[in-house]
Structures are given as C-alpha cells and as structure tokens.
Amino acid sequence: MKTIGLIGGMSWESTAHYYEKINQEIKKRMGGLHSAKIILNSLDFAPIAEWQENNQWEQVAGAVISAAQSLERAGADFIIICSNTGHKVAQQVSASVSIPFLHIAQAASDKIKENQLTKVGLLGTRYTMEQDFYKDVLKKNGIEVMIPDSEERKRLNNIIFNELCLGKINKRSSDFLEHVIENLINHGCQGIVLGCTELDMLIPDDEVSGVPVFDTTKIHVEAAVLQALKQQVR
Image (cartoon, rainbow, N blue to C red):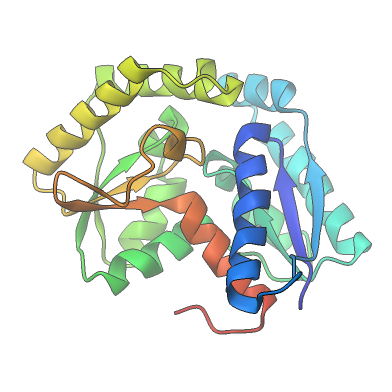
C-alpha cells in the first residue's frame, strides 16, 4: 500500500472527513484490520483564510508548498490537498515536489464524464465559483459550468466560512442550498458539483431533484485510495 500525503486544516472539519472516508474505503476494499497509510500536515486555517480574503495567494502557495515538501520528505508517495479552494495554488504545489499530485477537479471531471454529462452547476466558495482555476479543469474536459447568481454566491460563501468551517449545521442553510441547486437545474444543469469539501455536511445525498450530486470529497477520496492500492482510477 502506498502512503497518502494529506495537506489538511482548510478546514479541519473537512480534513477529518477525509481521514475517516479514506480509512472506510480501505477497509471496504481490503477488509479485516486494514487501514490507510497516511501522513497528515494540518495547517492553521486562520492566516490562510485571511490571505485568501486579501488576495495574497503567494502566501497561501508558500504555506501549502512547505506542507507538500514536508510530506515528501516524510515518505508520502503522493499528495492531495483536502480543500477545493486550496487548488488555486495546485500548479505551484505540484511543481514543488517530485511525487504525484492528485487534483480534485480532475477527479471530479473523470467522474462527471463517466456519467456522460456535459453541463454541471458548480457550488463552493466564492473563489472556486468565480475564479477560473477550478472551472478551467472542468472545461478542458469538455464540461460546461454554471454558477449561482451573485447574491446566492455571497450567501453560500458566508455559509461555508461562518457555519460549516466552524462545524455548524443549519437547517435554513441546507434549505437554501437545495433552492440554489433547483435554480441551476432549471437552467439546464445535468448534475451538481459540490466544489467545497464542507458542503457534503448539508447535502449528503448522491442525488437531488433527480440529478446526480458529485461530492468532491468522496470522489477525491476514491481516487486517493485507488492510487494507494496501485489501481488505475476508473
């Protein structure tokens, strides 16, 4: 079994889900007392969130690169970032190490294409929804991307940072998210990408209103486990 290097802490709530889901998947595939070989470098999210807010992505890149390099030195065979927004600096991080880097948006693209869909709605932080670093990966895979309107994006971003990243689950926020998803479906989206690793706390189902929901945490975990077991990602 290969050793998975996790860059976590963005937020620790979603990182905990990664750790749990990876081990559950290893147990399901290997049985018995098997568990995943993992090295975790968990960052302090407060300065990273502040750098993101102030558009100081060089500082974010520096912190994540340092974490990636420490994982490589510690013996990780490949690296994943336990955050969708953190993939804003994915290219710099991947270039800073000599071991493979598994990109969450590419894993999501593979799963969307497996379902033969061509148009999806993307939900996440305002950085993920509004900037190109994530959408471009989907588009390069032939997938059209729609995002919520400006007010919906603002409220969704607030829910992520002020509720989910603090471990708060609010029924009103869950209802709002379902409303946003309905709007995207009404505009022709064939599926919904939960492009934030905390959003599965509000939408745990694999389908909403008859369309598939792509939980990127679950998808990323599956890709990491297949890599760890030296299987080819389907």
